[in-house]
Length: 184
Image 1 (cartoon, rainbow, N blue to C red):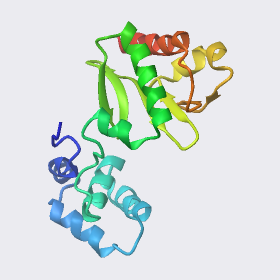
Image 2: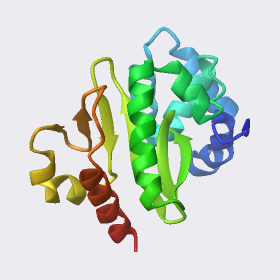
Image 3: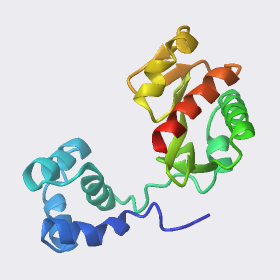
């Protein structure tokens, strides 16, 4: 699964076109402020030159030696990198969703497992030390299922679940159904 999808250099042609200078110009600018930390370097490009977050990140991280934003070549690589209890819970969540929606594709995006179809991202998962975050990619999915999430911590874009959470099929499928309806 090694592709160039995560390569920072893929942004370079659009950076040159959008911001009017060759990439060597932007790399030189960041090298001149190399003593600054990542957030300041990104802010410099965004505030002074109108860069998007993605373009600023590509330039700054390339200078820092990170040629790719991809950490994992496969979902198996991802699962091996996290706590086994979290991996078991996430795999169970994915299985619950894909049993009802088998055409959803499991991919790694933003270095996390995501389910998507041709219309967009449907459901994402991520881990923290003490919990798993599920992301239905939909504000209305988060707000319209309040009765089903009342015992969970609902954040702005995600729901925090315990690492050993037993998947609630009604909740998961309701979140996915809401997101799919939005994408139609």
